Length: 238
Image 1 (cartoon, rainbow, N blue to C red):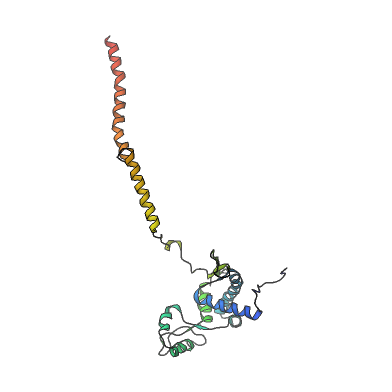
Image 2: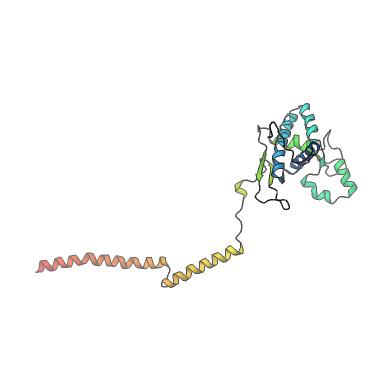
């Protein structure tokens, strides 16, 4: 029985587990969402929630919270997504200079510096200045766990997506998917069957038959009304 055990071991040593949490948390902060196994996502979620709570305190000026973030998460530099294509066109020496160039007083903020059009951004800088600002009015529940039906190829492990709340698309932006060739063929066969059924009934469509029957019904009703009147007149004459 796992009494008073707060953390999953995941068949790893404590140092390996802490390193895995840091790497996955850094990837989540960089990309906004990650796909991993369900067990790892459940273990990572409270770790990331705590980091965001500390980042909110650090954004308000708490030095202790900033030190705790460095202790738990450490730091590294990365290239933002909007500059990734330009970064791949650079040479190896310029890539190293772009990643290591100090921009800002203490943290790399991704702004241009000197002859460089852009520089690397710090994980800690994005956590404190971007993510913490996004959830400034939220008291908790910063992440979402989505279970996937498709299992991982190889070992069949259960997969899940861990993402930040607020980055998802609304239902209004979802477009109706186009019909496949199989659906188009099925619709054409159904339309052909309907037209053949109408031809077997006598040629005209059902709506036309109903409209043609209306004048005949009105004429029969007038004839029935005039018939009793003629009988009464014959009786009076006799």
